[in-house]
Length: 180
Image 1 (cartoon, one colour):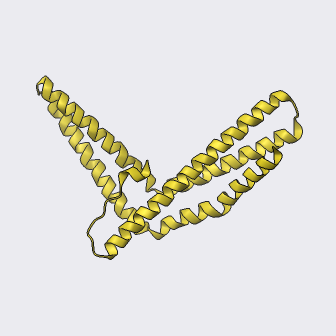
Image 2 (tube, one colour):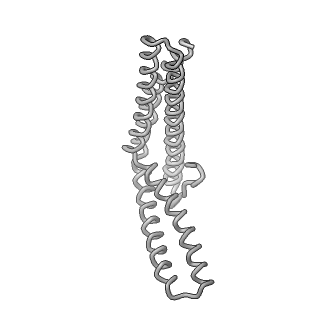
Image 3 (tube, rainbow, N blue to C red):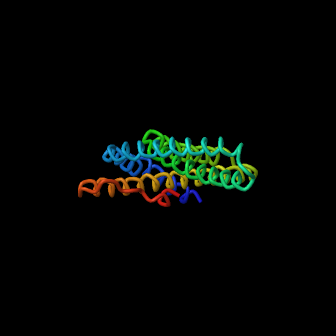
């Protein structure tokens, strides 16, 4: 078990020291694409807000059937706005760096707590808490890998946008399903 934890901690340190900085630094390469797409998403969010507000005002004076249709339209706009807001958050490099490095550092610190407990305590009741600490560390590490995957997907999509603009195309939409 000690060898597995040792290998796991080396993997976390390797990703924390090399892979995460490399991928997060790639965000800066496509800063223009990030700004362009963020502005487009902010405009979409404002437009959806205005549509939802208009529909909300229309609901008060309409018949029951039309009001339910407007409420359903508002719900769909709300879902679209949530998706756009998630993309805006995903396009924030500062937020992504905090997500990745925060989760990796937390995972590594939990491994250190596990090693400390394993070194000084040998009770069977402590064994359960060690396993819980290790499980939380593993889940946090998996979350950080998911964040890195999202960033990598974003970089690929922004590269496609830059390539399309270099070829003279006006606008290219990012596939919304890529960030799920």
